[in-house]
Every structure is written in structure tokens, then in C-alpha cells.
Length: 147
Ligand SMILES: [Zn+2]
Image (cartoon, rainbow, N blue to C red; front, side, top):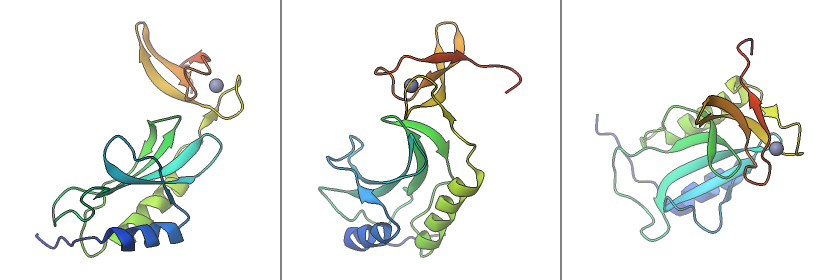
């Protein structure tokens, strides 16, 4: 399978803009053009485009577009299957966005601050739930086995 296509950054930005996504400014440290759209309180849908600010279009290749749900700065709350840069990238990207709306578990809101959500974290004494607004909010909870 070598049906990879080149994606034009202007076309990409138009398409995601139409879907309500805005570019994250200043650029994300990963050096890709990254786009976000607000989802529920404390979460955003984020698209890693594979396109870069300096070089714009990347040659045809196997690196893939990623559509994820993030909380806080950079915590991935929900991940979806990669979108290969083939002819069908638009359709597949829409499909991943739908997956987030339909299958993502309801985030658990932090009970200490107004817009954080509780995420699984690993600490010295095992896993616990910590607020996505850490270090501004230091709320933690034990993970209950009946959850
Ligand atoms: Zn909090």
C-alpha cells in the first residue's frame, strides 16, 4: 500500500477551521501544527496534523495524523486510532472526532477547582487520580476498585 498523499497546510487549516478547530499558538513543542477545539469542561479535542510550521507540507509518508482528547496542558484523556495520510484522511479524521463524541468515557470533574478533571496518575505509592490543573490544583483521590 503506497497510496499516501501530500496534504497542503492551507487546505488542512481550512478543513479543520470549518470543523471549529483553531491552531494552538504559539506552536506546540512537538513542532507540528496542532489544532484544538473545546469539548466538555476541562477537555479539548486536539489534532496533531503532521504538518510543520517551518517546512509546511511533509512528503508522502507513513507518519499519521492523531486525534485525541486532552485535559490540562498535555494529558491525553482519550486516544483514537491514527489517521494515515491517504486519500481518505478527511473522512477518517471526521470518524475519529465522532469516536471521541460517542465512545469517550465521561470525564470526572474535580471537586476542588471548577474546570479540572481527574486523571489517573502514577505516584510513589501506586496509581491515584490527580487533577488536570496540577500544580495549580493539588486535589487527589484514591482509585476505588468499584469504579
Ligand atoms: Zn482541580
